[in-house]
Image (cartoon, rainbow, N blue to C red):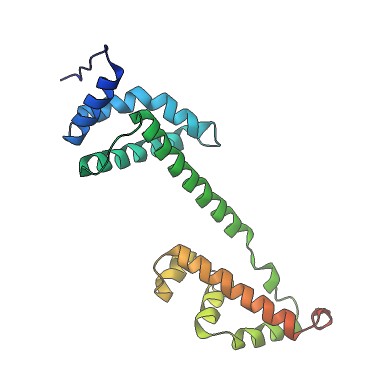
Length: 190
């Protein structure tokens, strides 16, 4: 059964489509999907996204729209396309932020913890011992055992990888601060 929408009044079109979606009409959702596909995916592609990422973001945005419309709590004060577009923008911003965090995480290599001399190894080991048990374990797992953030989160009982990343970052800052305050640069020279 094809979705028939009157062409005479675009506001009626919007209202009718929205009501059908509120009532669980998946054909209305399919109609929206095809009607706005190019506009929504173009936004992601023109902002450093791929066709696949654009499709995923658009599908996720429609799921969000569907759930909000079906909940009965959504009151449309703008066009459906405007509302879905803003959902797409928010989802894509979150994805870009996530990618940025991941690339920063990859850059965060254990350079400050190179163990190229016995003296340096002793200094860092001594500072590690001064950290709390949680920090010591997180840093050891990351730098020495080379565990992933997911593995660290699992071993430490953290809620998720973001918690593990934040903890690792803060612990590394503490360690760096200990090393800087307790040892001069001269201590690190061979």
